[in-house]
Length: 276
Length: 190
Image 1: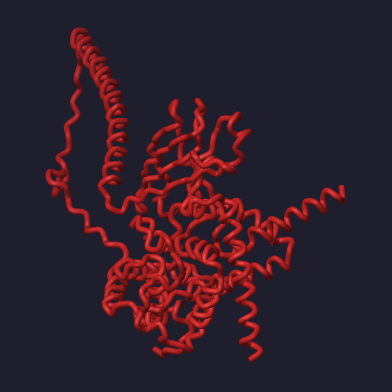
Image 2: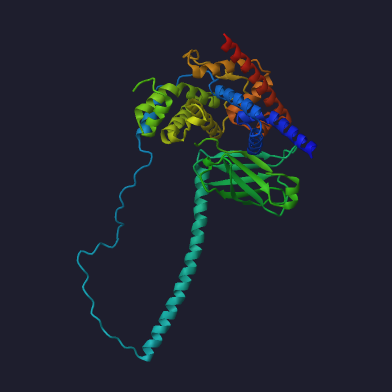
């Protein structure tokens, strides 16, 4: 038992030694970073060494040859700071044709007692049934219209995405040791929530692949993806927030047979790093 | 407003939307911010855009800086680095894909400006130390740091096995830290 602990400790030290330099400069993957952090918690010496590396990383930030920015940049910044961040909404104006506010109280109605013959009652019941039928059809049509509207919105989002010059394609690379064929491409815009993911050379399976978006330590499920007989597939994803909020994307198999071969995601890659 | 005002005080004023404080902060840090952005993007227009974006983030979100977690300059330059890397990816251009060293950027006219600035002293020293590393190690470190690449992305970009890339980065950083510690200790003893 004690020998096993010594082995674990020795493995942990080796991992820490290997990953600490890259971790300190922010070059490790989220899993590697989490592993280093857990090991650092029990090693004050390694934590001190990490601090030295981090001081070096700070110096690296100022290691570029120094160049003064153009004078116009200051004016531009001050103009941007002076402009309001959120444009104020104009006061709501009445819609054309909207009902005017009544200027005077409505005249009071007279109460009258109406009686119907059996023939008239029959017509009224038939009219009510017809009304209910039409109302039902109307509801059905509205729900279909709602579905169409959602699809139209998604198509509009996509059109807007493809029409935008700032659309970026990120590549997610194969995470398997000595394998390099699986690829995924994330097409997105930093300010949009809708993006497109295309995958190639994925292991063929009838099960879905799970798409994840990472923001800090928090992973968000962003939908599923199926691949065809060639291991290719494309899916439109709708992220909970704009893509600029996510630092990583990853895709992992849900097929238990594949999970046994692939630990963790099949492909992964960086998205946007900025945002504070 | 005094030029000797501490960063903490400037940030407090910026939180109150004091434009004079922002102007002072810009005067203090615009050169290192712009230089870092230019190092990453290799374009004056894009560097200007990244700098504008960085200062506007500070203007809107200055309260996010926590003095307990480090110096303001490090926080600001980290935001600059991430902002510029994001912009680099957006522009789909690789400013220095075959980066051979920090000096492949056009030599600026005023590189020797502010020789006594403590913020820039360490950076200048590190730039000099980087030249003492083997080319492959220096290249791997700089591509990873200034283009925001992970080990795997770096391996793909350099068309090398993952293990080779990890070793290059690790050995390079270990050597750089050793040189860094040695030089710092020598300077302190003098």
